[in-house]
Image (cartoon, rainbow, N blue to C red; front, side, top):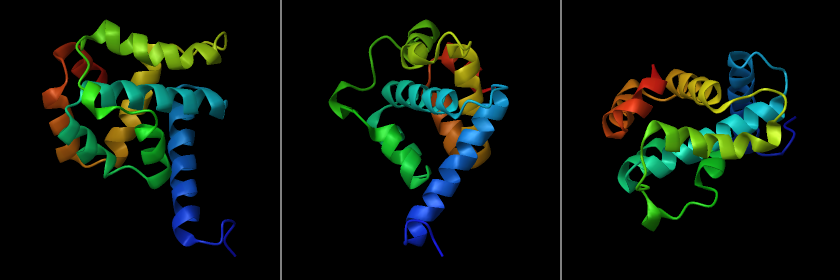
Amino acid sequence: MTTAGLDVFDSTVQQTNEWLNEIAEELHTDNRREAYLALRGTLHALRDNLVVEEATDLAAQLPMLVRGIYYEGWNPSKTPVRDRDRDAFLERVGAALDRAQPQGIYPEPAARAVFKVLSNHVSGGEIDQIRNVLHKDIRELLS
C-alpha cells in the first residue's frame, strides 16, 4: 500500500529522498536538513542565473517535489540576475545555508554536491546547455 495513496506522490517523495541522501553523502553528513538547504539554495541560485527558457527546461527534468522547491519564490521577470559571477552565486547559496551553521556546510561544497547529483539525474544534454549559459566561474562548480 502506498503512503500517500497515489503512486505519483509516493514516487516523487522517494526520488526526492534519494536526491537528499546523495547530497548528504557528498557532504559527508547524515543531516537531511542540511542536504535540503543545500539543494534548495543551490537550485534557487542556479535558477536565478539562467534565462527563463533554460530554467524551465531544467525544471522539466526534476522530480515533481524538487521542481516545487526549485520554483518556490521565483519571479521570472527578474532573471537572470545581473550579478552572475561565482562570488554572487555562492553568496546566494550561503544565504540559504545560514540556518544550517554552525554544522559546517559551506556554500561551495554544497553547490558542488548538488551539481553532482543534478549531473547524475538530469540528461547530459541539459547539463551541457546549463554549462553554456552560466558564467565561466560558476561553470567550474559543475565539474
